[in-house]
Image (cartoon, rainbow, N blue to C red; front, side):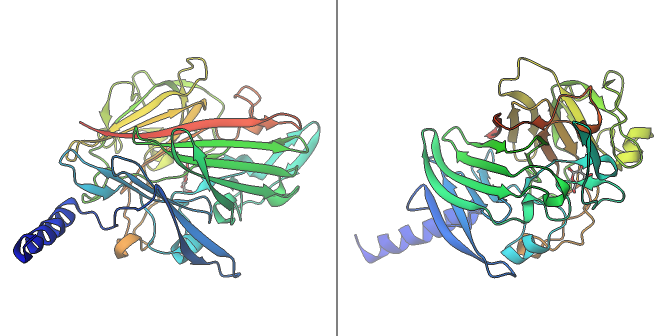
Length: 379
Ligand code: BGC
């Protein structure tokens, strides 16, 4: 090859990289493990980058089981990172928005940080006014998990395990938790959660990724959302479900037909006022509790599509109302109000205090197992 041809080849590679917006290099192996730094108490933390054959990449750290990056292509083939987060471990150590993290022991709120099991009242750490949110003061999002690469049949995989001690944040039982992240060749990030306990307890695990399928844009109000839910759970001023399962028909919570997130968000509506936008649990239509399609989001400018499939009975749709630009994220970006959305698949908030909601109890001898899939495509 002449020098000119070689120069031309190198230059065109650079142009492709520049045009694609791709900042990371192609991985030599489907899973690459690199150091992600040390926690303030001196524990080493790693970053596992999974890649599939289509060039999609997902990076996960064993600090908080956090999804640090999801790089997917748009309809032009331009690759971008579609989740909010930070450039380094420090950001996640100080984070208060739960960017990308595994949430446990209990996703969302438990009223007054209290519940009763078999006559015993448990008092939890309160970290959200008078309520307990996302596991309490030190939830699973701040734990250093054990990690190992595993050979899953459907793609590169990382397995995270964590033991939560009896009484931690007020919850009963020694709990062994496992979260397996797999990146499939169908461009899916599959999350398998499992757990066992040695004492009756409650458990509600989820992932708190914040998505913006058009990261070059500002907010997510143009994203078009569909949720397979005929009902949602209205909340009180503390964002605790009232217990009612309300029909979405004729309300601003009807996403059964694809509707832009911003179409009705600022309308005069008691529930939207309480949530400062959408911050509500949707009751997924029960099709037999297999891993079913729960929600679909289409971003019209980039053509990116996100489908959320789950075995869970609910999904918390949170429109990023509390993001206020105070967190300095990736590349120094300030994440403003509604600059991302979350679709947190889970059981309903405050279920331990609502016997009519699907149960979140876990007994010794039982195995907790749920699956959620975030599937990416374009149109
Ligand atoms: C909750 C919001 C909360 C956010 C960040 C969501 O799951 O529903 O109310 O502000 O998490 O903590």
